[in-house]
Image (cartoon, rainbow, N blue to C red; front, top):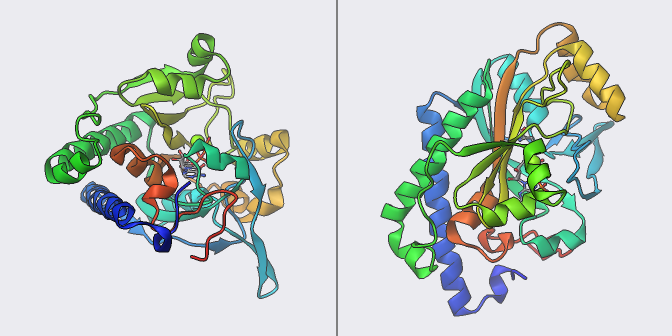
Length: 313
Ligand code: ATP
Ligand code: ASP
Ligand code: MG
């Protein structure tokens, strides 16, 4: 299990420092890449009345939702910035990204995956009028560019982590697979099985989940996507979005999502002020874990947030 800073040996501190340098280069590369592609950089929010329902999601494992009262109102810590992204993208910021802290109190057994923290950061972005094709272009460009830069500029660090040879620069375009095809081939445990088999990142599309991902009303096919990286698993989730009031309400009612928790979003949709968009969120600590070949996601966090364990910091 990852330990907090004050309990690391000299050798472990040296490893932490090296991972920190790769992490710094990663953040520097990603933020520059998004800014250069015309994205506005929004600072994140922590407390809001409305946040991601994270439901329904076949993989959901939230033990507790953090809510508190301020100024006589109930607010929640950010589960993801999806609601804020949809509103911001539809109004003032047609191309936006944010480094957003997400608090998800995952069930404690998830510490064993080595892939779940109870606080983490998403590089969340959204494009007005966007499509999977556009998102795919942006993501494949930044992932391949990032690995390439790290292998040149962080060569010594990757070598000391025994990761230089193992981390190949992925070849774009990445393969795209439909979830139905994947389930047929790998069964219900497709995510872990596919992750073990691939040598390059792979997109999986058409995954049933939250109301905000677009689902074709006739075919039932979902226009959403996850990106899986070899050996580790999902590093990104995203979608083209629903924007029409009637469809959003129908899906909330179908899925038992409380409409009162999304009052503003529904009000904007009813006023035809939500615009079509597409986007995604990259799990920053997961991306860095894959890049450095981490043994546990807590290793890449300066202050590990391991499900089931609360350290002082
Ligand atoms: P999983 O199925 O792996 O638990 P998820 O599909 O529930 O993840 P999303 O709601 O899609 O997660 O969150 C968007 C992105 O945030 C994920 O693709 C992942 O990169 C990252 N992420 C989600 N949960 C965690 C977590 N507990 N710790 C670290 N990163 C996470
Ligand atoms: N960030 C994700 C998205 O853009 C939402 C999530 O975190 O679940 O679709
Ligand atoms: Mg996901």
